[in-house]
Image (tube, rainbow, N blue to C red; front, side):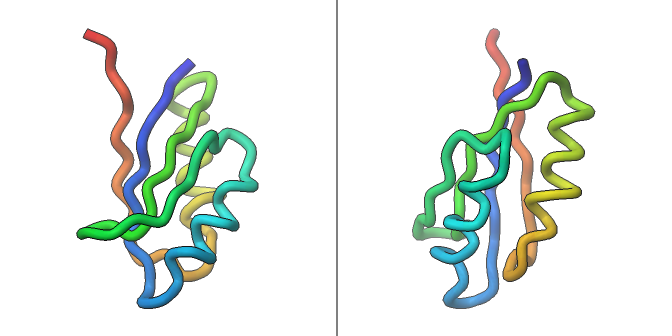
Length: 77
């Protein structure tokens, strides 16, 4: 299982709507609108890195109002 935080920048005024829509995507375990340089922070999981990439590119980035994403896989050292 691969887990990651996805940091999202949105169009002005779209953070809450983006977080709501993303929270319904399978594989997303949490989506919160926040303040700071990013507007939404998502925690997601997938079976492997390839599936995580597909989740981000095909589903999360397809949400209207998103301008940029940064995916940060969780590592256990």
